[in-house]
Image (cartoon, rainbow, N blue to C red; front, side, top):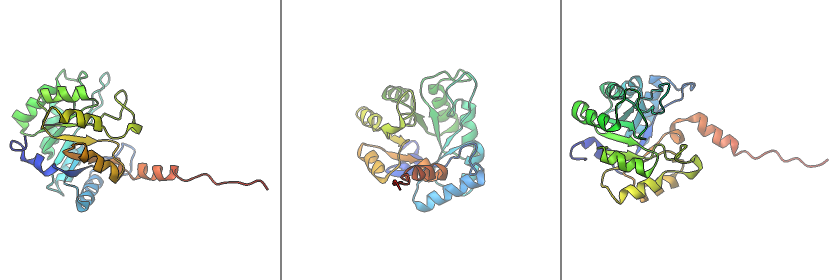
Length: 235
Protein backbone atom coordinates (compact mmCIF):
# COMPACT_ATOMS: atom_id res chain seq x y z
CA UNK A 1 0.00 0.00 0.00
CA UNK A 2 2.89 2.39 0.58
CA UNK A 3 3.62 2.48 -3.14
CA UNK A 4 0.00 3.59 -3.76
CA UNK A 5 -0.09 6.04 -0.85
CA UNK A 6 3.48 7.18 -0.16
CA UNK A 7 2.39 9.24 2.86
CA UNK A 8 2.12 5.97 4.76
CA UNK A 9 5.87 5.46 4.55
CA UNK A 10 6.41 8.63 6.57
CA UNK A 11 4.67 6.97 9.50
CA UNK A 12 6.68 3.75 9.38
CA UNK A 13 8.44 3.00 12.67
CA UNK A 14 7.65 6.46 13.96
CA UNK A 15 5.45 8.23 16.45
CA UNK A 16 2.13 9.89 15.59
CA UNK A 17 0.76 12.36 18.14
CA UNK A 18 -2.97 12.76 18.58
CA UNK A 19 -3.56 16.46 19.23
CA UNK A 20 -7.09 16.70 20.54
CA UNK A 21 -8.87 18.38 23.43
CA UNK A 22 -12.09 17.66 25.27
CA UNK A 23 -15.01 20.03 24.73
CA UNK A 24 -14.49 21.58 28.18
CA UNK A 25 -10.71 21.85 27.90
CA UNK A 26 -9.06 25.30 27.75
CA UNK A 27 -6.99 23.85 24.88
CA UNK A 28 -10.09 23.29 22.75
CA UNK A 29 -9.34 25.93 20.09
CA UNK A 30 -7.74 25.51 16.64
CA UNK A 31 -4.74 27.79 17.33
CA UNK A 32 -3.93 25.85 20.49
CA UNK A 33 -4.32 22.48 18.77
CA UNK A 34 -1.92 23.76 16.10
CA UNK A 35 0.53 24.82 18.83
CA UNK A 36 0.37 21.33 20.34
CA UNK A 37 1.11 19.86 16.93
CA UNK A 38 4.08 22.16 16.36
CA UNK A 39 5.48 21.25 19.78
CA UNK A 40 5.04 17.55 19.01
CA UNK A 41 6.81 18.01 15.68
CA UNK A 42 9.71 19.72 17.46
CA UNK A 43 9.90 16.65 19.71
CA UNK A 44 10.18 14.24 16.79
CA UNK A 45 6.62 13.28 15.87
CA UNK A 46 6.26 12.42 12.19
CA UNK A 47 2.49 12.76 11.93
CA UNK A 48 -0.66 13.82 13.73
CA UNK A 49 -4.18 12.59 14.40
CA UNK A 50 -6.52 15.59 14.38
CA UNK A 51 -10.27 15.96 14.94
CA UNK A 52 -12.53 18.30 12.93
CA UNK A 53 -12.03 20.30 9.74
CA UNK A 54 -11.24 23.47 11.71
CA UNK A 55 -8.43 21.85 13.67
CA UNK A 56 -7.08 20.01 10.63
CA UNK A 57 -6.88 23.30 8.72
CA UNK A 58 -5.09 24.98 11.63
CA UNK A 59 -2.50 22.21 11.87
CA UNK A 60 -2.01 22.06 8.11
CA UNK A 61 -1.24 25.78 8.16
CA UNK A 62 1.78 25.19 10.43
CA UNK A 63 3.05 21.76 9.35
CA UNK A 64 3.56 19.64 6.25
CA UNK A 65 3.66 16.36 8.19
CA UNK A 66 0.98 13.72 7.49
CA UNK A 67 -2.35 14.38 9.19
CA UNK A 68 -4.70 11.54 10.01
CA UNK A 69 -8.02 13.36 9.91
CA UNK A 70 -11.05 12.33 11.92
CA UNK A 71 -14.41 13.94 12.49
CA UNK A 72 -16.21 12.95 15.68
CA UNK A 73 -19.94 13.37 15.12
CA UNK A 74 -22.36 12.06 17.75
CA UNK A 75 -25.75 11.23 16.24
CA UNK A 76 -28.74 10.27 18.44
CA UNK A 77 -29.56 6.60 18.01
CA UNK A 78 -26.12 5.64 16.62
CA UNK A 79 -22.97 4.54 18.43
CA UNK A 80 -20.57 5.11 15.54
CA UNK A 81 -19.02 8.56 15.87
CA UNK A 82 -15.51 8.60 14.35
CA UNK A 83 -15.87 9.83 10.77
CA UNK A 84 -19.27 8.15 10.39
CA UNK A 85 -20.12 9.27 6.83
CA UNK A 86 -18.58 10.04 3.45
CA UNK A 87 -19.47 13.68 3.99
CA UNK A 88 -17.52 13.76 7.26
CA UNK A 89 -14.58 12.14 5.49
CA UNK A 90 -14.64 14.68 2.69
CA UNK A 91 -14.70 17.63 5.05
CA UNK A 92 -11.52 16.69 6.93
CA UNK A 93 -9.67 15.79 3.73
CA UNK A 94 -10.69 19.07 2.11
CA UNK A 95 -9.35 20.83 5.21
CA UNK A 96 -5.91 19.31 4.70
CA UNK A 97 -5.81 15.74 6.03
CA UNK A 98 -3.95 13.33 3.78
CA UNK A 99 -4.96 10.20 5.67
CA UNK A 100 -8.35 9.31 7.09
CA UNK A 101 -9.36 7.39 10.20
CA UNK A 102 -12.80 5.78 10.17
CA UNK A 103 -14.57 3.76 12.85
CA UNK A 104 -14.81 0.13 11.74
CA UNK A 105 -16.79 -1.56 14.50
CA UNK A 106 -19.49 -2.90 12.19
CA UNK A 107 -22.26 -0.89 13.87
CA UNK A 108 -24.95 0.97 11.85
CA UNK A 109 -23.99 4.38 10.52
CA UNK A 110 -26.23 7.50 10.42
CA UNK A 111 -26.55 7.72 6.63
CA UNK A 112 -26.84 3.96 6.13
CA UNK A 113 -23.38 3.83 4.56
CA UNK A 114 -20.94 1.04 5.33
CA UNK A 115 -17.28 1.14 6.22
CA UNK A 116 -16.51 -0.47 2.87
CA UNK A 117 -18.37 2.27 1.02
CA UNK A 118 -16.46 4.98 2.88
CA UNK A 119 -13.16 3.26 2.05
CA UNK A 120 -14.09 3.12 -1.62
CA UNK A 121 -15.12 6.77 -1.57
CA UNK A 122 -11.86 7.75 0.14
CA UNK A 123 -9.83 5.86 -2.47
CA UNK A 124 -11.71 6.83 -5.62
CA UNK A 125 -12.84 10.37 -4.85
CA UNK A 126 -10.62 11.70 -2.07
CA UNK A 127 -7.47 9.77 -3.04
CA UNK A 128 -6.39 9.13 0.56
CA UNK A 129 -5.68 5.94 2.53
CA UNK A 130 -8.00 4.81 5.31
CA UNK A 131 -7.10 3.70 8.80
CA UNK A 132 -9.72 1.45 10.39
CA UNK A 133 -10.37 2.11 14.08
CA UNK A 134 -11.26 -1.28 15.57
CA UNK A 135 -11.84 -2.86 18.96
CA UNK A 136 -11.03 -6.52 18.40
CA UNK A 137 -9.39 -9.01 16.06
CA UNK A 138 -12.55 -9.89 14.14
CA UNK A 139 -13.22 -6.24 13.37
CA UNK A 140 -9.65 -5.89 12.17
CA UNK A 141 -10.00 -8.86 9.85
CA UNK A 142 -13.25 -7.49 8.44
CA UNK A 143 -11.72 -4.05 7.95
CA UNK A 144 -8.87 -5.57 5.97
CA UNK A 145 -11.38 -7.44 3.82
CA UNK A 146 -13.27 -4.18 3.30
CA UNK A 147 -10.14 -2.52 1.94
CA UNK A 148 -8.62 -0.66 4.89
CA UNK A 149 -5.05 0.45 4.26
CA UNK A 150 -4.16 0.42 7.95
CA UNK A 151 -5.77 -1.03 11.06
CA UNK A 152 -5.53 0.71 14.45
CA UNK A 153 -6.36 -0.67 17.90
CA UNK A 154 -8.29 2.49 18.82
CA UNK A 155 -11.18 0.83 20.69
CA UNK A 156 -9.35 -2.16 22.17
CA UNK A 157 -9.33 -0.68 25.68
CA UNK A 158 -12.91 0.61 25.53
CA UNK A 159 -16.03 -1.34 26.61
CA UNK A 160 -17.29 -3.71 25.41
CA UNK A 161 -13.99 -4.69 23.77
CA UNK A 162 -11.63 -4.21 26.71
CA UNK A 163 -10.63 -2.13 29.70
CA UNK A 164 -8.03 0.64 30.07
CA UNK A 165 -6.08 -1.41 32.61
CA UNK A 166 -5.48 -4.04 29.92
CA UNK A 167 -3.03 -1.66 28.25
CA UNK A 168 -2.33 -1.28 24.51
CA UNK A 169 -4.11 -3.71 22.17
CA UNK A 170 -1.03 -5.74 21.30
CA UNK A 171 -3.08 -8.94 20.96
CA UNK A 172 -4.76 -7.41 17.91
CA UNK A 173 -1.42 -6.43 16.38
CA UNK A 174 0.08 -9.89 16.90
CA UNK A 175 -2.96 -11.69 15.50
CA UNK A 176 -3.35 -9.51 12.40
CA UNK A 177 0.39 -9.53 11.70
CA UNK A 178 0.08 -13.26 11.00
CA UNK A 179 -2.38 -12.71 8.16
CA UNK A 180 -1.51 -9.36 6.56
CA UNK A 181 1.40 -7.18 5.59
CA UNK A 182 -0.69 -4.03 5.71
CA UNK A 183 0.34 -1.49 8.38
CA UNK A 184 -0.93 -2.11 11.90
CA UNK A 185 -1.08 0.79 14.32
CA UNK A 186 -1.28 0.82 18.11
CA UNK A 187 -3.47 3.58 19.47
CA UNK A 188 -4.71 3.90 23.02
CA UNK A 189 -3.28 3.29 26.51
CA UNK A 190 0.32 4.05 25.52
CA UNK A 191 1.64 5.85 28.59
CA UNK A 192 5.30 4.93 28.96
CA UNK A 193 8.46 4.51 26.91
CA UNK A 194 8.26 0.82 27.77
CA UNK A 195 4.80 0.69 26.18
CA UNK A 196 6.24 2.18 23.00
CA UNK A 197 9.00 -0.42 22.83
CA UNK A 198 6.49 -3.21 23.43
CA UNK A 199 4.30 -1.93 20.60
CA UNK A 200 7.05 -1.99 18.02
CA UNK A 201 8.33 -5.34 19.23
CA UNK A 202 4.81 -6.72 18.75
CA UNK A 203 4.88 -5.65 15.09
CA UNK A 204 3.35 -2.18 15.11
CA UNK A 205 3.93 -0.11 11.97
CA UNK A 206 3.56 3.06 14.02
CA UNK A 207 2.25 4.18 17.41
CA UNK A 208 -0.28 6.91 18.10
CA UNK A 209 -0.07 8.67 21.48
CA UNK A 210 -2.57 11.24 22.62
CA UNK A 211 -3.36 11.86 26.29
CA UNK A 212 0.11 10.96 27.57
CA UNK A 213 1.50 13.88 25.55
CA UNK A 214 -1.25 16.40 24.82
CA UNK A 215 -3.69 16.25 27.77
CA UNK A 216 -2.09 18.14 30.68
CA UNK A 217 -5.21 17.81 32.82
CA UNK A 218 -5.11 14.01 32.62
CA UNK A 219 -1.34 13.90 33.06
CA UNK A 220 -1.59 16.11 36.13
CA UNK A 221 -4.40 14.00 37.56
CA UNK A 222 -2.29 10.84 37.29
CA UNK A 223 0.50 12.44 39.28
CA UNK A 224 -1.87 13.91 41.84
CA UNK A 225 -3.40 10.50 42.45
CA UNK A 226 0.06 9.11 43.14
CA UNK A 227 0.55 11.41 46.15
CA UNK A 228 0.43 9.25 49.26
CA UNK A 229 -1.86 10.29 52.12
CA UNK A 230 -0.34 12.25 54.98
CA UNK A 231 0.51 9.85 57.75
CA UNK A 232 -0.78 10.64 61.19
CA UNK A 233 0.47 9.31 64.47
CA UNK A 234 -1.34 9.08 67.76
CA UNK A 235 -0.44 11.93 70.13
